[in-house]
Image 1 (cartoon, rainbow, N blue to C red):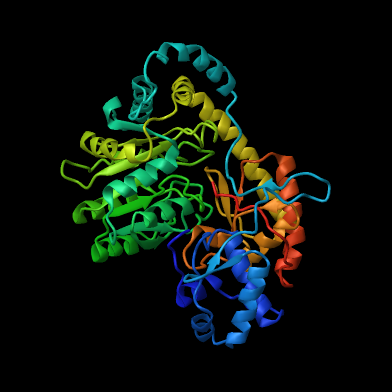
Image 2: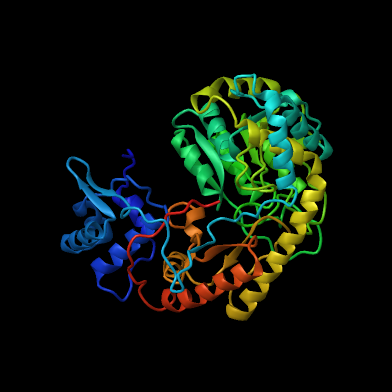
Length: 492
């Protein structure tokens, strides 16, 4: 069971505007249930005592007791002696069936299908595998020719790199967690963008970090390259946060930011790196979406390729992944950093795994030299997905705001009302799993936003918008109906 404990104050922040036309206990139970289903209250978290929550929310204790009782009866809370009320999910169901008998459509994953060249690469890798079978198969650092292929791709993109500056990991998520455990100690501050990729903040918090948020807003339509003033980052606030709080680490997504789609301008990159260097802050650049360009204007080098970087500057570690550009089933990621940092990471890596899967490394090593062709294939797929989302939103939800989107995997849609959580929960009753805006924030923020992937086929996207249309009528005007257990998918 988790050691996490929600205080009454923290739960109040997560609840947001929870009151509805339903009785108070019902409204409270509905919102807590939603937070559990959406992952914002992790399974195993201890909820505040009834008396404390009643005082914080200015409710009678009877109301809170009735809400907790309903949650227990529905399987969303357990009463554990000595631990109070602990969040759980009703036992296990993989998906809710649709009326037609089909499975749920999962829009929590902004991910593309496999690149066209993957089957041939997999067959060739399988034929190559016997050459490696005499060895033990435990490979903590990554195959030499794969690390060289990754290094060559960085060099092509404007950042000279050698193979010994690359450490291969089991996906980008392991890379984030490994960096957090290696370079953070409990109580350190970590600068993060808000909104951001939720599993990254989870990894930072597990390492004991205290999060220091800076704002990123969706980009406005602009036919030209963006300047530091209009790229979505409040760079002055970020510089001030670094100066005042002296964070040990900054986790940034500079290219096609998840979820807003914004790209950090060269000027903003220079200013943030300079601020980090002045205060000894380690910069982690998550570049897993960096090459998923549709029609971005201007030249965007890897974050560590700043023209003004010099010896003694704060280190920059870059995270890459095969999963976003090649296929999510290829759990291969990597870290690009200076050699001493790679050595520190390599020393810490055995605590999580003793090697990266060999066959998957061979597949990725065969596909990386085809990166230019694969990037062009992805460009066409993402452009088609973007236009489908724009068209359907304009037809069905003309008041929704679709931001400028020049690449990446999803649109950060402004839905005009603080009902994102209710909409996501109601959508489950219409066969759609989708992540509510607050899944990407802290303390219940971003209820006016919804992340809509642009990676699905036109048929699937039409189906998703039909579900959202049915859910909107409920979420925007009525209490969300209760249903039995649902899947709790991870956000990708």
